[in-house]
Length: 306
Ligand SMILES: Cc1cc2nc3c(=O)[nH]c(=O)nc-3n(C[C@H](O)[C@H](O)[C@H](O)COP(=O)(O)OP(=O)(O)OC[C@H]3O[C@@H](n4cnc5c(N)ncnc54)[C@H](O)[C@@H]3O)c2cc1C
Image: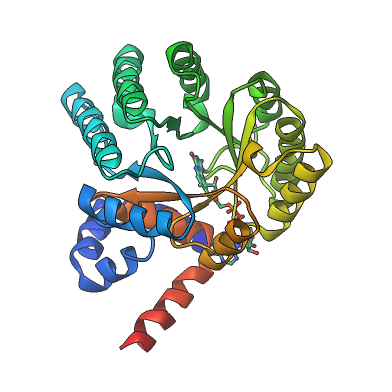
């Protein structure tokens, strides 16, 4: 129930404008988003790196409906990668990008060309790009772009969503040497025809996918805050004899920071997904949809801080 309220709120531009301009909204966002500009992203990334964490930086831009806006996304990422390099934050910091922000809904070829430019800038900065996964209607097109990018930039990362019924097959396809694959549960509401619906079925699918990736030859990036799945990933890494630099954990900025520290202190690579940008409202509502309990926790933290 609360999940659908937050997902509906994420798409409401009127609520977004009200919440984004209120100081409470900005305070809440500060817990999950670095800030609105590149300087904020660099400052927070530096702090995370000093704590021994790796980072993937994501730009939260407006919905892209024109080629010009897609070009602005490309320019933002190229600028960001230059700044990460000058700040000495690469290769520990990489970037995550959504193909929709590079114009995938306008023209696949345009999105591919712009993604190539971002990958070139990442290579120049000594780091990599990961292509975020969006809803299931984009999966084939995104994997096709990924294959094209990997011809020149083989470290380009993929994201696979365990809740999609097709994903075990995609894991088998992508579990090859050098292939970086982020496995997550999946954040988009999907129909039963293409996706498992119950939490139990999604968790079981996650473990099946994890088994394929951990037993394969690629580099699994285990993106979850779920303690049970983290424990299973640690177990599978031991079982398949992977050393600590042959896989990594990933979590979102502001979520389970203590657990991030515990895993890093245990010798694991832990990468924090760090969003920045003016369009943080929709991102925040999607996080609340996943974990409504966080709203109460944040409310308590904000009122006790004063
Ligand atoms: C680094 C990263 C990148 C991602 N990229 C994508 C992407 O490209 N595309 C996409 O569709 N989705 C992406 N996601 C989102 C993902 O698909 C899930 O929607 C999201 O991570 C929630 O699922 P979960 O596995 O973390 O666990 P959940 O199902 O949210 O939680 C399971 C259990 O974990 C525990 N838990 C969770 N959060 C907390 C917390 N904050 N504090 C304490 N306990 C907690 C609770 O016990 C909870 O019941 C990404 C997630 C991460 C971490």
